[in-house]
Length: 257
Ligand SMILES: C[S@@+](CC[C@H](N)C(=O)[O-])C[C@H]1O[C@@H](n2cnc3c(N)ncnc32)[C@H](O)[C@@H]1O
Image (cartoon, rainbow, N blue to C red):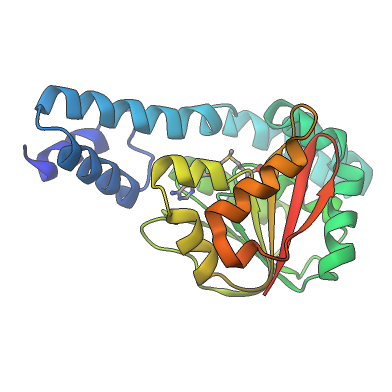
């Protein structure tokens, strides 16, 4: 099967054309090596890309979201800005928004207030910046794999007038090594392990930050401890002294390097 031809076809397809080329190449290569049958391989490639991408990225109408934010920023009222962002964020992650007032307070109690942050597989989380209660010149760099999402985030940063940046990058093919005080890996570890078993450990090992903050969804009793055991299995020694914070809706796990 012609990997190049397949890549070109996917790059011209509406559903996949905004996904980073590195992600497309990685998923194509993996499935072509796994399946002898061309039809099955193509089916699996499309399924994996759909599962990876559509579940998160297609949730938000970016143009509409930006239009909703513009009038709020014009007022320069922090409260109105938060309300406008909350509306979008509730659609995206209602569970985190239920605990957002304590979420960053609990994290920064352990890490201290960071001057620089990297946010891996950031999704729409950069919109929670006003809840971080950090100075506007905090260096906040975000990474994700969809070009439309990244374009939206950079337009949002411009609107907010902050010096933050979003970068399109497949963090499995090219792990993030930028130096920062704190790294966020929110609801990301299982997603990485599902794509490439072993990738989470490799990515965490390469992170150049003093603190690594991982979150996972908590559904049901005992889950906070279960997640911790899972993280220790996946990350090995790195997670030996992991600190856990139970916020009921989302569990936070912090690693100090
Ligand atoms: C479950 S969502 C979590 C989003 C965000 N961290 C949050 O908690 O609000 C996982 C995110 O990771 C991104 N992602 C998954 N695999 C990735 C990869 N290989 N490279 C870059 N981003 C990735 C997805 O596009 C998605 O936005």
